[in-house]
Image 1 (cartoon, helix red, strand yellow):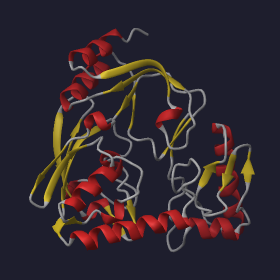
Image 2 (cartoon, rainbow, N blue to C red; image 1 turned 30 degrees about the vertical axis):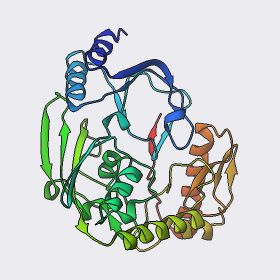
Image 3 (cartoon, helix red, strand yellow; image 1 turned 90 degrees about the horizontal axis):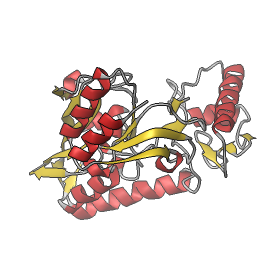
Length: 300
């Protein structure tokens, strides 16, 4: 397929693109084949023009952020990929409100908010994603979620038209939002924080980061928690109770540090991870009669 029109849109907006790009380097799992065209838009206008052109030319595409919750087949994908990167990473503060572009890394936002003595984002410190991905998944940790601080966001629809949506219309629930499964791209997000004490904020952030390092296998590539939390229980507990701690196929393993994580111990293939996920789900169903739902987004 000729992707010239999409390249020309990138060139018009001075946005980066590359051909036959390996996607493994853009995911925290470090797994995945290539795509024919990788695009890094640098503005909402660039996104809108691209989406309009994709629709007009009946061309499919995929969207990814920091790839911290994504597992990609070793065969790659056969369509263009829009990478929402730090090229869309601006933020604007207005007292205790911040509006930021969707590619802004959460850790960057957390540090800037702390420097301005703004509280509310402490729970997100250490979540290895972007603000757009965090809204898409309604990311959360330690009893807090993005829905606790979201005011609104702007998104581009499949025709390349921008819309603003308020929090109450975003259908935010556990690891879910209005955007799930829709051909939309979040372009910016507005959050409401509150004034706090800088020392207390930074200490809380460090406390939660220390907990992550202590309890999570951050030393290995992974996509974070592999399974959603089952109602009234914890995936890690069910997996350990099923005797699957340390279970491995090829380079993929159920973490011995935290059973809720499937990690890449070294050169794991896509099929290795899928095999581990399926084996864990089957064993937990057999031992606890619980159906574990995968939290990781899978491209295959």
